[in-house]
Image (cartoon, rainbow, N blue to C red; front, side, top):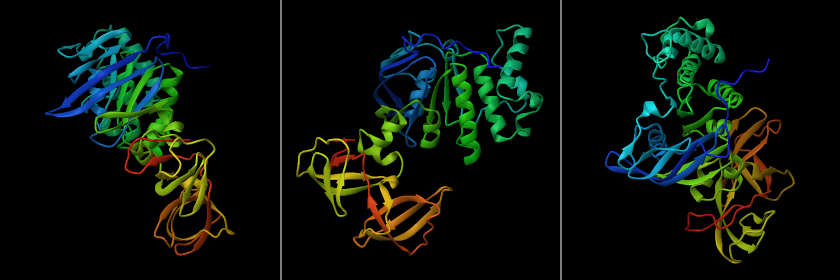
Length: 368
């Protein structure tokens, strides 16, 4: 039987969340500059960036814990924040899941989930708690206390507690950062599937791009308080609109080159050819982004380098290869091609997504 909807998805014609020109301080320092974005009902989106970039401040402003210097925040068509006027958090119908789970240690699992349901009758509370614990697979530990649970179970309790009051919007602040890699990937997918199945709108804040890619239908990359690009994971990887985004997303190096034609740049490794025109004038000095998947093993190639590091990834091995010029690239080869550190290997470059930046600038002048 298909799971019943906890919350209706609602119409997608009107954004559930709309932020216009938001600026905020964190203490005495400016933390967010003129940020605007919209989130539709039922969407799962992510704010991604390094520590201190302002992403958590945005989340706090949406929740009602942070005042605005300028701009506005609207939820379900209602303005809930603007300078000098802020609707209290408990009136916004926003749920939050924190990095440290913030569970009450003296309360059992079911009591933690029930803690935000004081306005309901006893019968309604029991029904809601049972429904939520069943939804997150925790009925069998309902009477245990947080210290008796695993990290993944604690995270599920925090999620159930946040969803119990039936919020319009769920906010998640680094929810998986305290979990080991295997658990965070599995739990992230489970949470994502549950939210999608129930049409729950969610904003995830994280510094980890794997978390962002697994949950975010749209991802906003932030740096120094500014939203640099709001896009799909595919476009952030293959069509970064800013040099910081290109450097932050995925692995790669920037290789000096010269524009030869609209689809060809000349590098120390010869011509690199893309599948679409770039708009930088011929003759310009640029940096071209080289990803590990742009470097292909070719035993007959005259382009040869030394393996200086390797990392086993299962089906693939990530190699660090250094050439005589001193240039170092990353390369992903099938794991059956098992080279040792110190081996000499031949490669060729297949850079179909030719991402170039004029040297000395931060904006992309040409992408794929």
